[in-house]
Length: 113
Image (cartoon, rainbow, N blue to C red; front, side, top):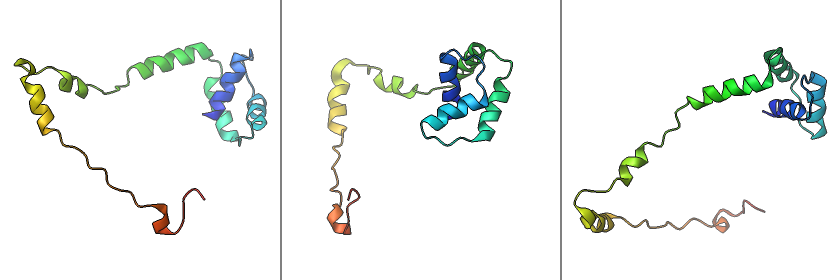
């Protein structure tokens, strides 16, 4: 991801065809390790392609990924019979009893020392 981020920073800065040295200089300026294989792989995959087209194609692929969340809709539906279901739900609701966590003193050390 850091290689892609460096490439995008260069593209935003006006460099339409960043080189491996350009990407390495950005990553080294922030103290990040540079993996030459990943830099070369990214450049080979993007060679001859328009960045805007690559991003648009990625958005289309990402839009088809299911994100879930359909289960909560059934729970939010009102019950037949008006408000009679609400008191019954309140009665069956169990209260959670919060268990006391062991203190750090019991172990002889603290995680934050």
